[in-house]
Image 1 (cartoon, rainbow, N blue to C red):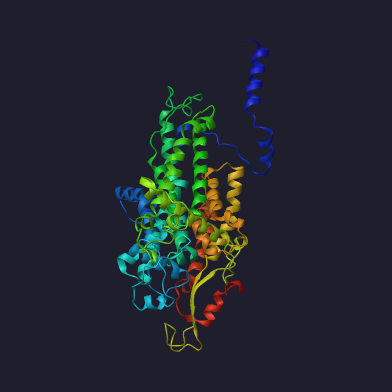
Image 2 (spheres, rainbow, N blue to C red; image 1 turned 45 degrees about the vertical axis):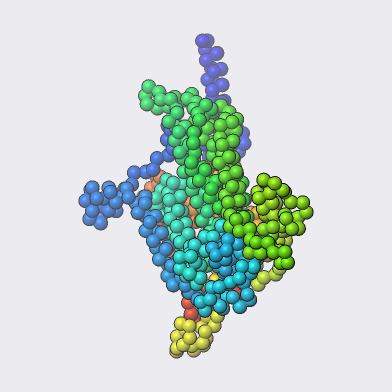
Length: 587
C-alpha cells in the first residue's frame, strides 16, 4: 500500500470515529455518548459489585461471617426495610373505626363480590350498620364504574377478618408493604446497588401518600402494586434476554469478544416467562382501574426499545428489523392478548351469576346489565353460541356506559385538584376529620380546646419537592448522558401522570398519583446516588456528598414523622394541627 493510500485510510478511520455534529454541539451542555467499554458482555449484563465487609468486620464479625452477612444484604436489607414499612402500616390499622372517604364504595362492593359475585345496592344507612356489626345485604344489582379485580383483592381481607375496618384495609396494607419490598429489589437490579435499592424502598416506606393509601381500602394502591410488579418483571426479562445475547457472542483468542462479533441479528431469545408474567400483572392492573391500560402501552413500548438496544449492543446490523422480526410478535402475544384475557376473566363472577327469570319482574339475582343483550339490546344471539355472545355483548354495552361516566365526570368536589399541582402537593385529600372534645376519642382530658383527628392523603412534602428536582436531573441523565435507567423511570412516571392532563375538566384527585410514587422514589434515589459521587471520586468529594445526601434523607424521614399524627387520625391539640397545615390549600 502506498503512503498516500495509507494516509487516506487513516484519515477515513479518523473521520468515521468522529461524532456527528449534533453530538459535538450537545457536548457543550454535558452530553456524553455511549461509554466505551472493552467488554461487550459486561455492557450487556453489568455485574453487581462485590459487597464490602468492612462494616461487619468493624462490628466484630469474623471474616467468614462478615462475607456471609455482606452477601446476604441483597435480600436481608430489603426485608428489613419492608418489615419497618409493614410495622407502621399495620399499626392500629382499624383506626379510625369508620368508613372513610371512598371506602364507602369499595369496601362494600368487595363484600358483595365475595358474597354474590357482583356488586349490589346498599341502603343509605349501611355505613353505620356495618360499623355496628351488621353485614347482611340484599342482592339487587348495582351500577359500578370500575372493573372488579381491586375489589376482589380488598374482599380477600374481609373474607379473612370480616366486614370491619381492619378487614377491608388488610390486603391494601399487605400490598403496600410488599410494594416496598419489591421496590428495594427493583432498585437494586436497576442501579446495581443494594444501598440505592434499599434507599428507594425506604423513601417509599416514609412517603405520606403511599402510607395513607396503604391504610385505606381504595383501588389505587392495588393498581400501584400490579404496575410496579409488571415493571419489575420486565426488568428481570431485560437482564435475562441480554444474558442470552451475551452467551451467544463468540470469544476471541484472548478471552474477549472480537470487535466485529455479531449475535444481535440471528439469536433467538426463546421463552420469556418474565414477560408473560408482566402481561398477567398488566392485565390485573387494567382490571383494577382502566388507567392501567396506559401502562400496558407504555411498558410494551419500553420493552421493545430495550430489545432494540440489546440487539444493537450485541452487534446487530439492523437492530430495529431484528427486533421487529424476532421479538415484537412474541412480546405482543405475551402482553396484549394475555392482559385482555385476564381482564375478561376478572368478570367471571358477573358472567356465571346469570340469575333467574321471572315473567313479572324480569331477570333477578344477576349483575347489572347482565342480560342486556336478551332484554334491551335488540336481537340477541341464538343457538350454541348464545351463552357466549350474549354475555359479551351485554358486557360491551356496560363498558361503554362506564367509559362515558369516567370521561365526563365533572361533579365539583371540595378536594379535587388539577394535575399541574400534584408534584408540589398543593391540594391533598382529607379522608377523615373530627374534632373530639377534651377527654374523648384520645383527646387529652386537660386539653384547653378541642382536638383534631384527621387522615390526610398528603405526600411527604420534602420527598415530593425533592422529586421535582430529581425528575429534572433524570431528564438531563436521559437526554444528555444516555442513561437508560433514567429513561425507564421517566417513562413510568409519565405513563401514570401525563394522561390526566387530557381531562382538565374531569373531577380528579391527587391520590391518583400514588400509582407512580414508587418511580418518584427511584428518581430521588438516583439523585442521591449522584450526590454521593461517581466511582473514583476523591475522599473529600465522598464525604461532602455523604453529608449532603444523609442530611436530605434525615430531613425527609423527620418530615414523615412530623406529619405522622395526621396520617393516622391521632387526636392532637388544635394548635398542633394548625401548625401542620403549612398552606391554606391543605385545609
